[in-house]
Length: 256
Image 1: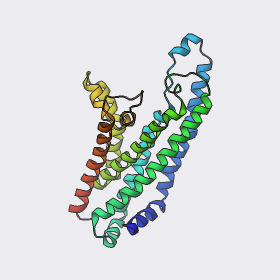
Image 2 (image 1 turned 180 degrees about the horizontal axis):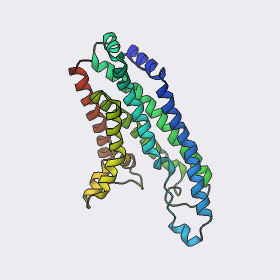
Image 3 (image 1 turned 135 degrees about the vertical axis):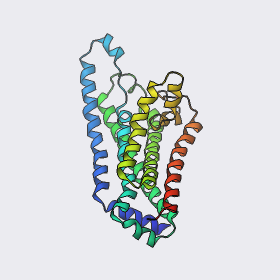
Image 4 (image 1 turned 60 degrees about the vertical axis):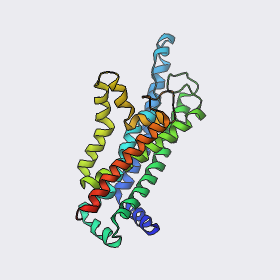
């Protein structure tokens, strides 16, 4: 398995798309700084009464779905690019056990996504808190920094899970466009549709969406949904297992 992991890591870092995507994630931190600065300038110009009603969500959480999508796309391309170029035949000739090939890709893409997600989250958190300073901007900047560490770690885990979902969708569809559209629907379309449902179905549907699971996983005060931490963890695992299971089934049964 070590050789498979080394091979998958070599393949992933040797393509330009990997570095382009990681570059986009890195650029999200200056974007957080810009947006936070705009919010601070607006808050400074408000009278006290308006400041009390000012809503300032934490910017690292506001941009988290975009980072999840970036890492999901990276994982999609890790498998679909091999189908597009025909290199999947070489990979399977070198490692005939197809589940091992997908398992190696899963470990590498999840590891890179987890690291990239955490670097973005902690970097964006540090930058935005430094810009806000001691301003009591509710609700995203009122808690002590150390109290937000569990939420940041859980959000990083959600990035890795979304990457695994992307890998599974890519293996199942063998189409980069199809997998990316499905992933985008999961991250951006379903939350909108869930919000249109009548209560209490809106809350129930929203509680199982990837964007809301991190907060429930650590029982954060801003969490959307009422799942217990173990329930949120179970849903996260279910996303990864379902997507990778579908991808494994297609990879094992269909010709390369």
